[in-house]
Image (cartoon, rainbow, N blue to C red; front, side):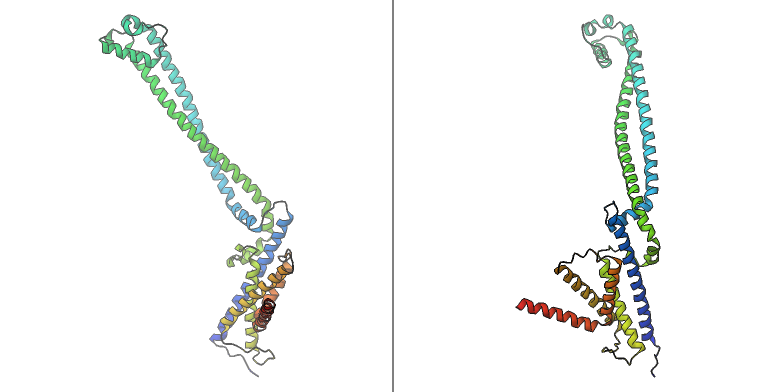
Length: 337
């Protein structure tokens, strides 16, 4: 009776087998979980793929903080807009006050008596700027400003009116910019709330499988799209099958299998994984050729089917290689004929 000699090679074999086995379980759990969610989404009214719903669900984890931040920014910007609105009203009142003061000062100044050459034109509307221009022209002509009643009041009122007008213009420009920011932030908040509503609709599907996701989160397999997951599952199943047969040969060196134990375990595992993937591609391609739609391929039992195919292909990769060779010969013969 032969016993297993424990050495470093045996330890590596056992450790590699354990790692592949854990990956196999993780990929199988992930594949089944993804398909359950995909089936629920397909039967729902959301019209979302698994990847779209998954991304939406992940975004929803940060949506509350983003909405709070957006609301805070919107509130702050709205306050700024309110302050500008009050400032505009204040500057309007200030400008009107200076305008009335200037009008009273002009009325008491007796401009036509002081400078008849410039102010005796009838039918001309005397705005603040026109009055100041004419006063400056009269002073240039030789008239004395000391002889003009309310000269200082007119200049002061005009300066105050001009300052209020400039500040009003600046405030209105700032208000236009702030209003644009308010609109943008308001639209952003609405979009975030709509996104939150959509995420809340698909969240129950992922919450139901949250335990599975937590278990396999270390492997990051849940990030793989469901369309690629069958290939990954078949590949890992083939590797697991290769590890399994290698351990069987290690434990039972005298057996009836037509396979001899190999010292190159990792090459054997890699071969099993690739052979299983090749078998998967050939089978799926064959289904497509005969007109199979493949709609049921993603169901959980189909995942188990392809997993078992990958497992056996990895275990008996030599026979799977012979099978692939026969199929290639068949295709070559048909093409030749």
